Length: 132
Image (cartoon, rainbow, N blue to C red; front, side, top):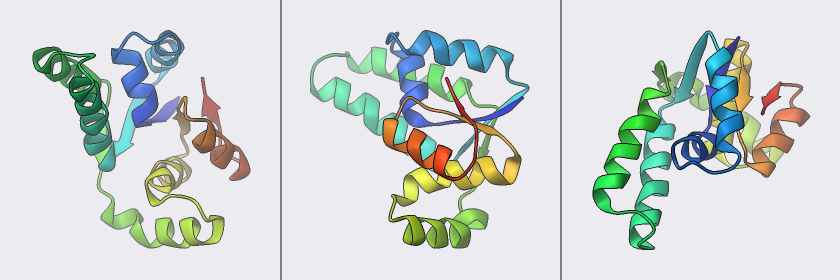
């Protein structure tokens, strides 16, 4: 099974959050894990927030960044998705970032791995599969 990993799920997995174990279970059964390019900036930003809140030391955040990036087999460029993402985000009145994951999943015939409630609803509304 091919999956698209979203930033919320990736962070949950490397931060040891309760939902992270379910994410890791799904990833362990995946044949390939892909993510759109914004994944890198989103997980980096998420870890930075933990550092600024003094919930993670900078070195720990760097280690977790390495770990979350290793969960992904292939980072997909956004440029080839951009027109479709713009159309879908405009029609659905939903963020461009979330549509990058959804459009990539649709194009790749993949399920989306996310713990983000709003993205889960979007994925369902598009007739795609979501895990965990």
